[in-house]
Image (cartoon, rainbow, N blue to C red; front, top):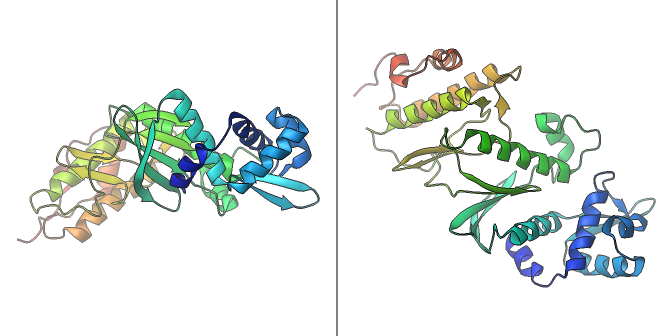
Length: 307
């Protein structure tokens, strides 16, 4: 998707971006933007707007639908193009690389800046934004919710968390943010789910993850979705990523979400490394983090694993 957009952008003219920005502005008020309002939103004449609509539609940057009126909305490719255009103008991104991962709620690509970085496009809400709106806190204050709004708010939420946490907590270093996209440091290694830890490493890595969760809590955040799929492992340590659903520690459910996170990660190590991981009282660990008394997972270990 993004690779095609990067190629398409070479064909676009400045006024094409005016058109895309105009449709974006209109989508703040309506899921489908009335074609008659687009010239005003885009700052183009009616004739020029009609020409730009055809150019952008031919390149799958906008789509058309006839309801009681002729309406247009951005595709995610169009939204990607606007974000990439802004990053290029800022000289944050100078070239696109290969895909680093494609998921249900985000796509991540390698990009060139002054050194290789990662570019994350949030995709929350594209196929079912109403369900996402019900589940995620960051969309609960807006009556008209589009996938565009949902994805942008997710990116804003994640980038804000990364800025607050880095470098005190081991998270990807945030570089830049625009719309639904974030430029950040690349992950240093594979996800915990794909890592093959040696037997003597398992408890140490679990301890590292819990220590970073403790540091995040001290910095005012609970991840709220910790799993083996958003912890990266390398010889230098661990990095916790994917923070759009995080909550601040004064959130009414923060401690409950922290307890769930701790249980998730402790249970994972118990399943994957049963012979190396002692029984750990996850609830006691979570309570210690809340009380500022967590030092090491070993203090909460019950019976040692059988040799």
